[in-house]
Image: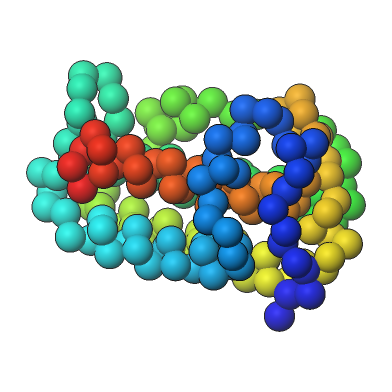
Length: 175
C-alpha cells in the first residue's frame, strides 16, 4: 500500500500545457479516480458496435479504436517517465509523436475488445506502480520533453488525459 499522498501537483511541477489535464482530475483520492476511470471507460467502450468502434467524426481524425490505443500508449509513456524519476533517474527523456505512434498502432486489424483489455492491463500496471510510491518518491522530478515534471504530476496527467479523451469520445463520437 502506498505511503504517498499523491497531492494535486503545483503548477511548477509540470509544463503549463498540461495544466488543462490536471484541472480535469476531480478532487479526492487519485488512485480511486484512476481505478474508477478504468472501469467506467471499459464499460462505455465495451457497449460499442464494430461500426461505432471504427467511426471517425471527420476525415483524417482518429477512430474510436485509435483513441483507445493512444490513451494506452500515452499512459505507458507517462508511467515510464514516472518510474524513471521515482527511482532517481535524471536522464532527460524525449517527447514522442503521438500521431506517428497512432498511425502505426494497426488498430484496424484489432478488435475494440482487445484494445480495451490492453488499456485495462496498462492501467492495472500504473496502479500497481502508484501504490508503491512513498511521499519522497512521488515528489521527485525529472526532465521529459524539455520540461521538468514530478512523479505525482505524471500520475495526474494520466487521469486528466484519459478524462479529456473520454469527453471527446462522448461529444464528437456519440459514445
